[in-house]
Image (cartoon, rainbow, N blue to C red; front, side, top):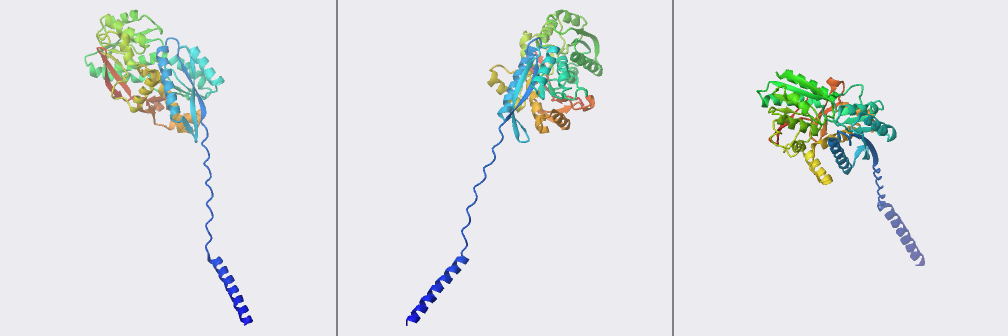
Amino acid sequence: MKKLLMLAIIIAVVFVLVFAGCSKTTTTPAPAPAPAPTPAAPAPAPQTLNIGAVWGMTGPFSAGELLMVKGEAICKDWINSKGGITVKGQKYLINMIDFDNKSTGDGSVTGAQKLVFQDKVKFVIGDVVGFTIEATRSITDPNKVLYFTSEYDTPSTNFPYTVGAYFAYWASKPALYDYLVKAYPNVKTVTLAHQDELSNKMADDKAIEMIKSHGLTLLHDETYPMGVSDHLPLVTKLVATHPDVIDFNMESNVGAADIVKNARQLGFKGPLLYNSPTDINSLISMIGNPAYSTDFILPAFDPNTPNITPLLTQIIKLWDNAYHTPFYVDALRGWDPLYCVVQAIEKAQSLDPADVVKALQTMDTIDTAEGPAKIGGQKTFGFKSMVLPDCPITRVMNGKAEFIGFTPVDVP
Protein backbone atom coordinates (compact mmCIF):
# COMPACT_ATOMS: atom_id res chain seq x y z
CA MET A 1 0.00 0.00 0.00
CA LYS A 2 2.79 2.32 0.89
CA LYS A 3 4.48 1.48 -2.38
CA LEU A 4 1.35 2.34 -4.33
CA LEU A 5 0.97 5.65 -2.52
CA MET A 6 4.59 6.56 -3.19
CA LEU A 7 4.19 5.68 -6.89
CA ALA A 8 1.09 7.86 -7.15
CA ILE A 9 2.94 10.83 -5.61
CA ILE A 10 5.87 10.38 -8.01
CA ILE A 11 3.53 10.23 -11.01
CA ALA A 12 1.71 13.39 -9.82
CA VAL A 13 4.98 15.28 -9.37
CA VAL A 14 6.20 14.27 -12.83
CA PHE A 15 2.86 15.28 -14.35
CA VAL A 16 3.03 18.71 -12.73
CA LEU A 17 6.61 19.24 -13.89
CA VAL A 18 5.86 18.18 -17.45
CA PHE A 19 2.71 20.30 -17.61
CA ALA A 20 4.58 23.29 -16.27
CA GLY A 21 7.34 22.84 -18.81
CA CYS A 22 4.89 22.56 -21.67
CA SER A 23 3.00 25.62 -20.53
CA LYS A 24 6.22 27.60 -20.36
CA THR A 25 7.28 26.68 -23.87
CA THR A 26 3.92 27.47 -25.48
CA THR A 27 3.17 30.82 -23.79
CA THR A 28 3.89 33.93 -26.02
CA PRO A 29 6.26 36.26 -24.18
CA ALA A 30 5.04 39.78 -23.44
CA PRO A 31 6.31 42.34 -26.03
CA ALA A 32 9.35 44.37 -25.05
CA PRO A 33 8.60 48.02 -24.26
CA ALA A 34 9.13 50.41 -27.25
CA PRO A 35 12.29 52.46 -27.06
CA ALA A 36 11.80 56.10 -26.12
CA PRO A 37 11.73 58.39 -29.22
CA THR A 38 14.99 60.19 -29.96
CA PRO A 39 14.50 63.96 -29.45
CA ALA A 40 14.64 65.97 -32.71
CA ALA A 41 17.81 67.98 -33.12
CA PRO A 42 17.10 71.64 -32.35
CA ALA A 43 17.03 73.96 -35.37
CA PRO A 44 20.24 75.95 -35.67
CA ALA A 45 19.97 79.42 -34.24
CA PRO A 46 19.63 82.19 -36.84
CA GLN A 47 22.85 83.85 -37.86
CA THR A 48 23.36 87.45 -38.98
CA LEU A 49 23.93 88.49 -42.58
CA ASN A 50 25.34 92.00 -42.97
CA ILE A 51 24.25 93.82 -46.12
CA GLY A 52 25.66 97.23 -47.01
CA ALA A 53 23.88 100.21 -48.54
CA VAL A 54 25.16 103.44 -50.06
CA TRP A 55 22.75 106.38 -50.12
CA GLY A 56 22.80 110.15 -50.52
CA MET A 57 21.46 110.84 -47.05
CA THR A 58 22.76 114.41 -47.15
CA GLY A 59 23.37 116.68 -50.11
CA PRO A 60 21.22 117.47 -53.15
CA PHE A 61 19.79 113.95 -53.58
CA SER A 62 18.90 113.41 -49.94
CA ALA A 63 15.20 114.38 -50.08
CA GLY A 64 14.38 111.32 -52.17
CA GLU A 65 17.07 108.95 -50.95
CA LEU A 66 16.18 109.36 -47.28
CA LEU A 67 12.76 107.98 -48.21
CA MET A 68 14.52 105.06 -49.87
CA VAL A 69 16.48 104.38 -46.68
CA LYS A 70 13.15 104.14 -44.86
CA GLY A 71 11.84 101.76 -47.50
CA GLU A 72 14.94 99.61 -47.04
CA ALA A 73 14.36 99.59 -43.27
CA ILE A 74 10.79 98.33 -43.43
CA CYS A 75 11.80 95.70 -45.99
CA LYS A 76 14.55 94.45 -43.66
CA ASP A 77 12.11 94.24 -40.74
CA TRP A 78 9.52 92.49 -42.90
CA ILE A 79 12.00 89.87 -44.10
CA ASN A 80 13.32 89.26 -40.58
CA SER A 81 9.77 88.94 -39.23
CA LYS A 82 9.22 86.10 -41.72
CA GLY A 83 12.30 84.26 -40.46
CA GLY A 84 14.96 85.96 -42.55
CA ILE A 85 16.82 84.29 -45.41
CA THR A 86 17.10 80.49 -45.52
CA VAL A 87 20.19 78.98 -47.13
CA LYS A 88 20.60 75.18 -46.94
CA GLY A 89 18.46 75.02 -43.81
CA GLN A 90 20.30 77.82 -42.02
CA LYS A 91 18.37 81.00 -41.32
CA TYR A 92 19.99 84.42 -41.51
CA LEU A 93 18.55 87.63 -40.11
CA ILE A 94 19.54 90.75 -42.02
CA ASN A 95 21.53 93.59 -40.51
CA MET A 96 21.83 96.68 -42.69
CA ILE A 97 24.96 98.85 -42.67
CA ASP A 98 24.07 102.19 -44.29
CA PHE A 99 26.62 104.72 -45.51
CA ASP A 100 25.99 108.35 -46.47
CA ASN A 101 27.83 109.23 -49.68
CA LYS A 102 26.77 112.88 -49.26
CA SER A 103 25.41 112.75 -52.84
CA THR A 104 28.95 112.68 -54.27
CA GLY A 105 31.03 110.25 -56.29
CA ASP A 106 33.94 110.49 -53.87
CA GLY A 107 31.58 109.70 -51.01
CA SER A 108 30.36 106.62 -52.87
CA VAL A 109 33.93 105.36 -53.31
CA THR A 110 34.64 105.94 -49.61
CA GLY A 111 31.43 104.19 -48.59
CA ALA A 112 32.03 101.21 -50.84
CA GLN A 113 35.59 100.84 -49.55
CA LYS A 114 34.38 100.86 -45.94
CA LEU A 115 31.65 98.33 -46.61
CA VAL A 116 33.85 95.97 -48.62
CA PHE A 117 37.17 96.14 -46.79
CA GLN A 118 36.18 97.05 -43.23
CA ASP A 119 32.70 95.61 -42.81
CA LYS A 120 33.44 92.66 -45.13
CA VAL A 121 29.97 92.68 -46.70
CA LYS A 122 29.31 90.54 -49.76
CA PHE A 123 26.13 92.34 -50.84
CA VAL A 124 25.45 96.07 -51.30
CA ILE A 125 22.30 97.91 -52.37
CA GLY A 126 21.20 101.48 -53.00
CA ASP A 127 21.35 104.71 -54.98
CA VAL A 128 19.51 106.07 -58.00
CA VAL A 129 22.04 108.56 -59.42
CA GLY A 130 24.17 107.46 -62.35
CA PHE A 131 27.57 108.85 -61.43
CA THR A 132 27.38 107.84 -57.76
CA ILE A 133 26.29 104.32 -58.77
CA GLU A 134 29.27 104.04 -61.09
CA ALA A 135 31.56 105.26 -58.30
CA THR A 136 30.23 102.55 -55.96
CA ARG A 137 30.53 99.78 -58.54
CA SER A 138 34.16 100.76 -59.19
CA ILE A 139 34.91 99.26 -55.77
CA THR A 140 32.27 96.56 -55.31
CA ASP A 141 32.49 94.89 -58.70
CA PRO A 142 36.27 94.23 -58.92
CA ASN A 143 36.04 92.75 -55.41
CA LYS A 144 33.18 90.44 -56.48
CA VAL A 145 30.62 92.01 -54.19
CA LEU A 146 27.09 91.87 -55.63
CA TYR A 147 25.72 95.41 -55.95
CA PHE A 148 21.96 95.67 -56.51
CA THR A 149 21.35 99.31 -57.38
CA SER A 150 17.97 100.96 -56.94
CA GLU A 151 17.93 102.03 -60.59
CA TYR A 152 20.55 101.39 -63.26
CA ASP A 153 21.27 103.09 -66.58
CA THR A 154 24.65 101.71 -67.62
CA PRO A 155 24.97 97.92 -67.19
CA SER A 156 28.17 96.49 -68.67
CA THR A 157 29.80 93.09 -68.90
CA ASN A 158 32.84 94.84 -67.41
CA PHE A 159 30.78 95.03 -64.20
CA PRO A 160 28.99 91.65 -64.01
CA TYR A 161 28.35 91.95 -60.27
CA THR A 162 26.25 95.13 -60.64
CA VAL A 163 22.53 94.73 -61.36
CA GLY A 164 19.60 97.15 -61.30
CA ALA A 165 16.46 96.51 -59.25
CA TYR A 166 14.50 98.92 -61.47
CA PHE A 167 14.60 99.82 -65.13
CA ALA A 168 16.79 102.64 -66.41
CA TYR A 169 15.40 106.16 -66.57
CA TRP A 170 15.62 106.06 -70.37
CA ALA A 171 13.61 102.81 -70.52
CA SER A 172 10.33 104.59 -69.76
CA LYS A 173 10.62 106.93 -72.77
CA PRO A 174 8.77 104.66 -75.23
CA ALA A 175 5.78 104.40 -72.88
CA LEU A 176 5.74 108.17 -72.29
CA TYR A 177 5.82 109.03 -75.99
CA ASP A 178 3.31 106.33 -76.92
CA TYR A 179 0.87 107.91 -74.49
CA LEU A 180 1.78 111.46 -75.55
CA VAL A 181 0.89 111.02 -79.22
CA LYS A 182 -2.25 109.07 -78.35
CA ALA A 183 -3.58 111.60 -75.82
CA TYR A 184 -2.39 114.70 -77.72
CA PRO A 185 -2.64 113.87 -81.42
CA ASN A 186 -2.13 117.51 -82.45
CA VAL A 187 1.34 117.92 -80.94
CA LYS A 188 4.09 118.20 -83.53
CA THR A 189 7.16 119.77 -81.91
CA VAL A 190 9.23 119.04 -78.82
CA THR A 191 11.93 120.94 -76.95
CA LEU A 192 14.26 118.95 -74.69
CA ALA A 193 16.36 119.80 -71.65
CA HIS A 194 18.71 117.63 -69.62
CA GLN A 195 21.29 118.04 -66.90
CA ASP A 196 24.95 117.59 -67.78
CA GLU A 197 25.26 114.04 -66.42
CA LEU A 198 25.46 110.61 -68.04
CA SER A 199 22.08 109.21 -66.99
CA ASN A 200 20.37 112.43 -68.04
CA LYS A 201 22.20 112.31 -71.38
CA MET A 202 21.09 108.73 -71.98
CA ALA A 203 17.46 109.65 -71.26
CA ASP A 204 17.81 112.64 -73.58
CA ASP A 205 19.23 110.44 -76.35
CA LYS A 206 16.31 108.04 -75.95
CA ALA A 207 13.89 110.98 -76.12
CA ILE A 208 15.44 112.06 -79.44
CA GLU A 209 14.97 108.51 -80.73
CA MET A 210 11.32 108.53 -79.64
CA ILE A 211 10.68 111.97 -81.16
CA LYS A 212 11.88 110.68 -84.52
CA SER A 213 10.06 107.34 -84.34
CA HIS A 214 6.78 109.04 -83.39
CA GLY A 215 6.92 111.52 -86.29
CA LEU A 216 7.60 114.57 -84.12
CA THR A 217 10.06 117.40 -84.68
CA LEU A 218 12.84 118.33 -82.24
CA LEU A 219 13.13 122.12 -81.99
CA HIS A 220 15.87 122.49 -79.38
CA ASP A 221 17.95 120.42 -76.95
CA GLU A 222 19.36 122.31 -73.95
CA THR A 223 22.07 120.97 -71.64
CA TYR A 224 22.44 122.62 -68.23
CA PRO A 225 24.54 122.00 -65.09
CA MET A 226 23.39 119.79 -62.24
CA GLY A 227 22.48 121.51 -59.00
CA VAL A 228 20.77 124.55 -60.53
CA SER A 229 18.49 126.15 -57.94
CA ASP A 230 16.92 128.84 -60.13
CA HIS A 231 15.43 127.30 -63.26
CA LEU A 232 13.81 130.46 -64.61
CA PRO A 233 16.60 131.31 -67.11
CA LEU A 234 16.54 127.74 -68.41
CA VAL A 235 12.77 127.60 -68.75
CA THR A 236 12.67 131.03 -70.38
CA LYS A 237 14.98 129.70 -73.10
CA LEU A 238 12.86 126.55 -73.55
CA VAL A 239 9.56 128.39 -73.80
CA ALA A 240 11.07 130.84 -76.30
CA THR A 241 11.41 128.00 -78.83
CA HIS A 242 7.56 127.81 -78.93
CA PRO A 243 7.25 124.02 -78.67
CA ASP A 244 4.08 122.00 -78.38
CA VAL A 245 5.78 119.82 -75.71
CA ILE A 246 8.62 120.35 -73.24
CA ASP A 247 10.43 117.20 -72.11
CA PHE A 248 12.82 118.08 -69.27
CA ASN A 249 13.90 114.51 -68.59
CA MET A 250 15.11 114.14 -64.98
CA GLU A 251 15.43 116.49 -62.04
CA SER A 252 15.09 116.50 -58.30
CA ASN A 253 11.49 116.83 -57.17
CA VAL A 254 12.20 120.41 -56.10
CA GLY A 255 13.75 121.14 -59.49
CA ALA A 256 10.88 119.53 -61.36
CA ALA A 257 8.32 121.56 -59.43
CA ASP A 258 10.30 124.72 -60.16
CA ILE A 259 10.40 123.98 -63.90
CA VAL A 260 6.67 123.26 -64.06
CA LYS A 261 5.78 126.44 -62.15
CA ASN A 262 8.11 128.60 -64.26
CA ALA A 263 6.80 127.16 -67.53
CA ARG A 264 3.17 127.86 -66.62
CA GLN A 265 3.96 131.31 -65.28
CA LEU A 266 5.65 132.10 -68.60
CA GLY A 267 2.49 131.11 -70.43
CA PHE A 268 3.41 127.65 -71.72
CA LYS A 269 0.21 125.60 -71.98
CA GLY A 270 1.38 122.36 -73.62
CA PRO A 271 2.21 118.99 -72.09
CA LEU A 272 5.25 118.70 -69.82
CA LEU A 273 7.11 115.39 -69.65
CA TYR A 274 9.11 114.39 -66.59
CA ASN A 275 11.08 111.16 -66.49
CA SER A 276 11.47 110.31 -62.79
CA PRO A 277 9.41 107.54 -61.10
CA THR A 278 8.87 109.68 -58.04
CA ASP A 279 6.06 110.50 -55.65
CA ILE A 280 3.28 112.32 -57.47
CA ASN A 281 1.51 113.77 -54.46
CA SER A 282 4.63 115.45 -53.10
CA LEU A 283 5.26 116.96 -56.53
CA ILE A 284 1.72 118.29 -56.77
CA SER A 285 2.14 119.81 -53.32
CA MET A 286 5.43 121.47 -54.31
CA ILE A 287 3.94 122.89 -57.51
CA GLY A 288 1.11 124.39 -55.50
CA ASN A 289 -1.32 126.03 -57.90
CA PRO A 290 -3.51 123.26 -59.39
CA ALA A 291 -3.70 125.20 -62.66
CA TYR A 292 0.07 124.78 -63.01
CA SER A 293 0.11 121.02 -62.49
CA THR A 294 -1.98 120.14 -65.49
CA ASP A 295 -1.01 118.20 -68.64
CA PHE A 296 1.96 117.01 -66.61
CA ILE A 297 2.96 113.42 -67.51
CA LEU A 298 5.40 111.13 -65.72
CA PRO A 299 6.20 107.40 -65.25
CA ALA A 300 4.87 107.08 -61.72
CA PHE A 301 1.68 106.22 -59.86
CA ASP A 302 -0.35 107.48 -56.95
CA PRO A 303 -0.22 104.87 -54.16
CA ASN A 304 -3.94 105.51 -53.59
CA THR A 305 -4.77 104.00 -56.98
CA PRO A 306 -6.85 100.77 -56.75
CA ASN A 307 -4.45 99.07 -59.18
CA ILE A 308 -1.67 98.46 -56.68
CA THR A 309 -0.50 94.96 -55.74
CA PRO A 310 -1.36 93.17 -52.46
CA LEU A 311 2.31 93.42 -51.47
CA LEU A 312 2.31 97.17 -52.01
CA THR A 313 -0.83 97.44 -49.91
CA GLN A 314 1.05 95.63 -47.15
CA ILE A 315 4.10 97.87 -47.59
CA ILE A 316 1.98 100.97 -47.16
CA LYS A 317 0.60 99.55 -43.88
CA LEU A 318 4.13 98.75 -42.70
CA TRP A 319 5.18 102.31 -43.55
CA ASP A 320 2.24 103.76 -41.67
CA ASN A 321 2.98 101.65 -38.59
CA ALA A 322 6.66 102.56 -38.65
CA TYR A 323 6.58 106.25 -39.55
CA HIS A 324 3.00 107.56 -39.15
CA THR A 325 3.42 109.77 -42.22
CA PRO A 326 1.98 109.62 -45.75
CA PHE A 327 3.58 106.92 -47.89
CA TYR A 328 6.00 108.03 -50.62
CA VAL A 329 6.49 105.91 -53.73
CA ASP A 330 10.20 106.78 -53.63
CA ALA A 331 10.44 104.32 -50.72
CA LEU A 332 10.04 101.44 -53.18
CA ARG A 333 13.48 102.21 -54.60
CA GLY A 334 14.77 101.21 -51.17
CA TRP A 335 12.46 98.20 -50.75
CA ASP A 336 13.00 96.48 -54.09
CA PRO A 337 16.82 96.17 -54.21
CA LEU A 338 16.88 94.47 -50.81
CA TYR A 339 13.90 92.27 -51.69
CA CYS A 340 15.61 91.27 -54.96
CA VAL A 341 18.89 90.42 -53.21
CA VAL A 342 17.03 88.13 -50.79
CA GLN A 343 15.26 86.30 -53.62
CA ALA A 344 18.50 85.87 -55.57
CA ILE A 345 20.34 84.49 -52.52
CA GLU A 346 17.57 81.99 -51.82
CA LYS A 347 17.52 80.97 -55.48
CA ALA A 348 21.28 80.33 -55.35
CA GLN A 349 21.14 78.74 -51.89
CA SER A 350 24.51 80.34 -51.32
CA LEU A 351 26.04 83.42 -49.71
CA ASP A 352 28.81 83.47 -52.30
CA PRO A 353 28.12 86.43 -54.62
CA ALA A 354 29.51 84.47 -57.58
CA ASP A 355 26.85 81.80 -57.05
CA VAL A 356 24.15 84.44 -56.66
CA VAL A 357 25.19 86.17 -59.88
CA LYS A 358 25.00 82.82 -61.69
CA ALA A 359 21.57 82.14 -60.21
CA LEU A 360 20.30 85.50 -61.41
CA GLN A 361 21.26 84.57 -64.96
CA THR A 362 18.92 81.57 -64.73
CA MET A 363 15.97 83.63 -63.51
CA ASP A 364 13.47 85.07 -65.98
CA THR A 365 11.28 86.81 -63.40
CA ILE A 366 11.56 88.13 -59.87
CA ASP A 367 8.98 89.57 -57.49
CA THR A 368 8.85 93.31 -56.74
CA ALA A 369 6.58 95.64 -54.81
CA GLU A 370 4.86 96.44 -58.10
CA GLY A 371 4.33 92.77 -58.95
CA PRO A 372 6.26 90.09 -60.89
CA ALA A 373 8.95 91.60 -63.12
CA LYS A 374 11.07 90.33 -65.98
CA ILE A 375 14.84 90.33 -65.71
CA GLY A 376 16.17 91.83 -68.94
CA GLY A 377 19.29 93.12 -70.59
CA GLN A 378 20.75 89.91 -72.04
CA LYS A 379 20.68 91.11 -75.65
CA THR A 380 21.22 94.79 -74.89
CA PHE A 381 24.06 94.50 -72.37
CA GLY A 382 25.33 90.94 -72.68
CA PHE A 383 23.83 89.62 -69.43
CA LYS A 384 20.63 89.80 -67.40
CA SER A 385 21.24 93.06 -65.62
CA MET A 386 18.00 94.93 -65.05
CA VAL A 387 14.71 94.16 -63.26
CA LEU A 388 11.81 95.32 -65.43
CA PRO A 389 8.48 95.84 -63.67
CA ASP A 390 5.77 97.38 -65.83
CA CYS A 391 6.06 101.14 -66.26
CA PRO A 392 3.25 103.19 -64.68
CA ILE A 393 2.00 106.26 -66.55
CA THR A 394 0.15 109.07 -64.79
CA ARG A 395 -1.15 112.39 -66.07
CA VAL A 396 -1.72 115.21 -63.59
CA MET A 397 -4.67 117.45 -64.47
CA ASN A 398 -5.65 120.46 -62.35
CA GLY A 399 -3.64 119.17 -59.41
CA LYS A 400 -5.18 115.66 -59.51
CA ALA A 401 -3.36 112.48 -60.52
CA GLU A 402 -5.04 110.46 -63.27
CA PHE A 403 -3.55 106.98 -63.42
CA ILE A 404 -3.36 105.86 -67.05
CA GLY A 405 -2.06 102.33 -66.53
CA PHE A 406 0.96 100.04 -66.53
CA THR A 407 2.93 99.39 -69.72
CA PRO A 408 5.50 96.61 -70.21
CA VAL A 409 9.09 97.81 -70.43
CA ASP A 410 11.25 96.23 -73.11
CA VAL A 411 15.00 96.00 -72.50
CA PRO A 412 15.79 92.74 -74.32
